[in-house]
Length: 141
Image (tube, rainbow, N blue to C red; front, side, top):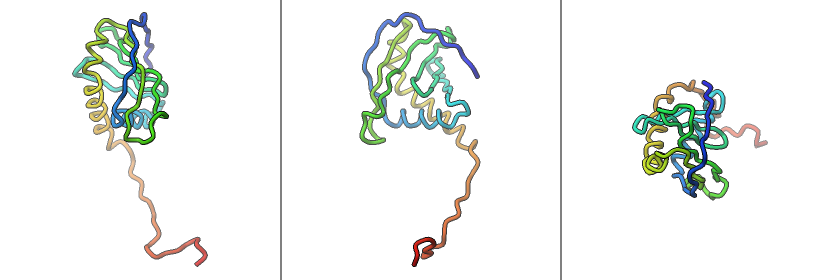
């Protein structure tokens, strides 16, 4: 799928943080996608999230090619553990962006979980061959 996204004038920008579970799940889905971009429909808000390597962009269903919000300058390298929140900058482009931003953290996480559950069976299973217990292959015993 290819989508061209246009951005209107930046109306506001503010520092925020995202729960670790949300960030980690978004990255997992993004990395599993064939082209490095995950599309996540957030039905409760009528928004489509586009997760790529650099940012998360949220499109309003009424103006499909126009960004409503973007989460930019993601800073996962500022955390010391995978269970810590990720700082970012929220950028609002449309008038309804502030209202959407109030509900977006929770609704985005729930949408990510729903997509992950649907895709759980998509991955082929891999059987790992482990040496029997007590086997010391390659240790020069």
